[in-house]
Amino acid sequence: MKFYTPLVPATLLRRYKRFLSDVVLEDGREVTAHCPNPGAMTGLAEPGMRVWVEPNDDPRKKLKYGWRLTELPGGHIAGIDTGVPNRVVGEALRAGAVPGLTGAVRAEVKYGANSRVDFLVTGDRGDTYVEVKNCHLRRDGTLAEFPDCVTTRGAKHMDELAEMVRQGHRAVLIFLVQRTDCDRVSVAADIDPGYARAFGAARAAGVDVLALSSRITTEGVEAGPPLPVTGG
Image (cartoon, rainbow, N blue to C red; front, side, top):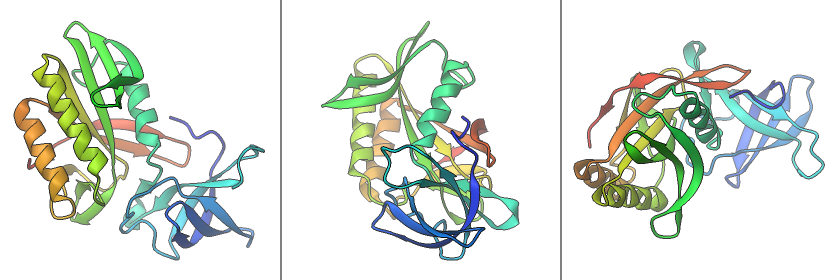
């Protein structure tokens, strides 16, 4: 997945009202950038951090910049846009690059209780229902965790995936780890015990769980090799 326009570096002043951030560009201008992330963004939104924003000239958009990346210690980088994982995984699915998932790919297919599954993959194994989750919380070593805040919607998705399995279909949850300094994934049960219970029940029901690493640059984000998922 390539960014639509070249990113430009900036320094983060603050993130506020969930979807807004103030940054200082390299030329000294202070601008407001859209923050496409409703989560806690723990460790990714500290004032003074170097970030990368994407300019746009779309007259329909009030804000002319969108925050995309945060630089991390040790030369690492994190993607903060929660809309990116679906684009990245969608490209990988259509390219046949996700292990065990090949076939015709459709996005945003209605299922469950007034929901839409991120992707429906139809192949030799029948229908596979695929949900994608953005994962970029890191609190302990090289462990990536999901979620970074309470997500009742995420728990509902796990219940619906489990129901698809009970109906005879295959269901897969994919965590896309949108940071380059992690090598395994787990559920943050202390942050959201309800999601952790739904995750464990879905896994016990037969929902497959896959985590993918990311290759992140200022030009774009691509899916990388699988990572182990612990717990649940």
